[in-house]
Image (cartoon, rainbow, N blue to C red; front, side, top):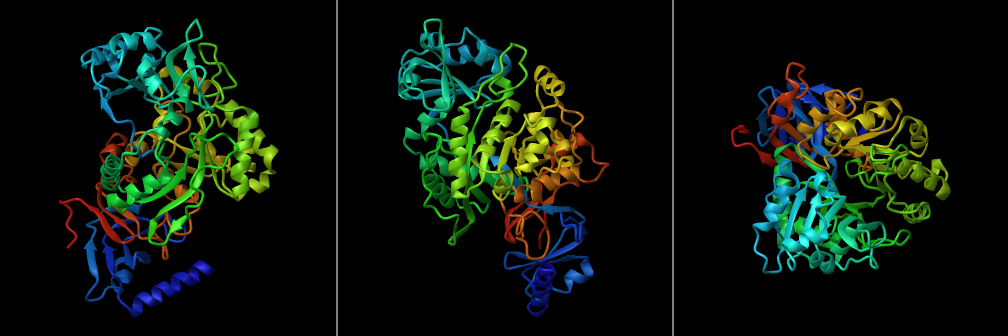
Length: 532
């Protein structure tokens, strides 16, 4: 009733004073159960005033109203990417490495670089290189004895370092940050493999790079707006929140961002930094700060996710923190009334989390915080009901469903990595990229999941999870994620109709936004799309 009354007031005020903008002659997927489809929308002062047919909405236009003919195009609520990592890494010389070439390609790329100087040599590598016993600290030292070398596995959860890099980051068998560990050789010395917080925490000591961070933000947000993304929920590893917010403001991007605390050099149970920051700065309402993320295990790709069933090599992965430490970090978040966002890939990890949550508070007490499980490969069938009882929200990443054959077989054998089953279990679902940023490529992945072909989502389900689902995951469902009166005027006019069943699935990744609005203002317009 309250929403209907608010809609009436908005419509009445729009009739009294003409609206700023009307978009008409389109195909609107609103995401609003009260009016799921429409052809036109009226916007005023950054908010949606009315949604309906052309005749009704065009009545709200006056002499000063801007009118945009959508030419029959598909319009959707702005995409809200619930899991991103817009950040900046080490000052480095990024090597061009063909991952298909394996260790040989990495060695060749390193050998081609001068040995003198102190500039870092970095590259992303495949899991086969990370696992190769012939690619360790001593072999890297032979190629570069003084220049720091850091080769990061593409999952981001393991890396190979030479001695100079280990020294620069202050890592040794006697000095390992909580939540991380080092690979050891037969003698017990560091062999160059660095995992989890051992590779992330030291980077907090590096000097900030504000100009580079501003450029990264400007480049990445421009790309996202061209894809129809209007909001992201970001976990910037290795960048302080004040530095990130300053760079975001300086970049001038209109994209909305939720900045999520990701403590790195903090012991479980201790409060994270910058708790004095307001959730919303009235001077910059597009930037919010909330939530605390902890990374509790690795991924199945490097066998770092803690699993109840053994991997093919007999290992079970491992937890980054003990059961007591998980309870301590959860207790700290709960006491602040904040939302926990937990990287949980393994089913053993999820079982440990649910046990720790039970130790901290009753399930009903957690529900108001909407605890999030990021990735959730380990949300096994027998854990679904427990997860629902605690009010768990699953944030899944469609690109994670494109696993190689061995990992796909493992997921299928143990009924892990759910997608469609989540809705059936009554668990809220949001989608985030955590990989390729295109929501339309991820729509293809979610509707044709290689590793769990029985867990397909329809295109409409994907769109709902990327809009209303992601808004719910950040407590923003009252003003984002739908094209409905009173909601923020965030939307995208698409280059092709992703909901048209005649559009082939393999054509989805080619989708772009012809027009992206954030708060009713044009944030991106394709030069070929006429708006006048």
